[in-house]
Image 1 (cartoon, each protein chain N blue to C red):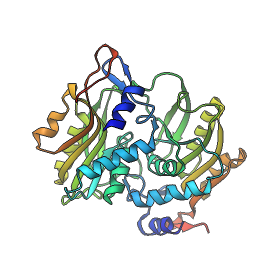
Image 2: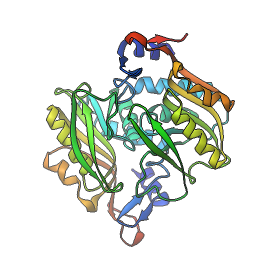
Image 3: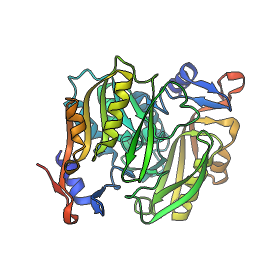
Length: 190
Length: 190
């Protein structure tokens, strides 16, 4: 996706530890017009998959997920990292490590909003080591739902999180794939 | 907003402690078509305020905020509750209490994305005791930006968080106001 590639190359910053900072349009400030186009792209690619729900994890996945879901005419479910007084029964949980936050999180989804008969499209902002995707695949299996696709805004291809998706034979679309962040340079995989 | 009132009355559940659970369309699952209409409503109401940025707090404020911002042609900035390796410099922070999560959070915004010259519209899912709004007003004052409006999806009018907005003479629109949740019944303020 050219528009997204241009944005990453012009506004992305490489931080120590192979971290790509894109706070100007995705992880802190949201470029909503760009996210609307991102959502349109995912919806077009997965249009024949009979998706019944778009699933993501709070917080940075929510913007691309809602625009994808709007184009598909289905609801979003966002897995929660923090339990609250309202999210309290019928929960399915799994553990995921967050590298950028240096902590382990329990992510949780209610059985009220993902059903065994669902055909799910997972949307997330980043695919790096695949911790979140692995967690969402685990939750979906516990429920017995089908994952019909995975859509990723930015994939750090050198960190190989894609293997968890491929092992399950799930179709995946990453809008931009990063080949390397070495020497503070963003090199795209074409 | 009739559509939202109907949704709250049909799907909302009252939990102990005056908590309104609306996980089916706002706080866990997101009804994106409804949120698109919510965003349209906020954008229409505040259209003459020369808004330059829509500001919210992760996570449940993001969906109504992105649709509002899309209609206004401006970006969203979501304040973060957790610091990450990418959110690390030029931060403005404040402390807020979360009643439904039973904890105190530091919320943070980067000075890169809210500027002294900004004219801000704050959007949030709930206004209850006003902790989050008070925090966002504090952050905005530290930066020196102007808050031109506050848009709330559901206000628990009996908890009086509105006072923080009124003390600052900021225009506020709550799409639905709840008068009481006593005896497990949702009573709307008309």
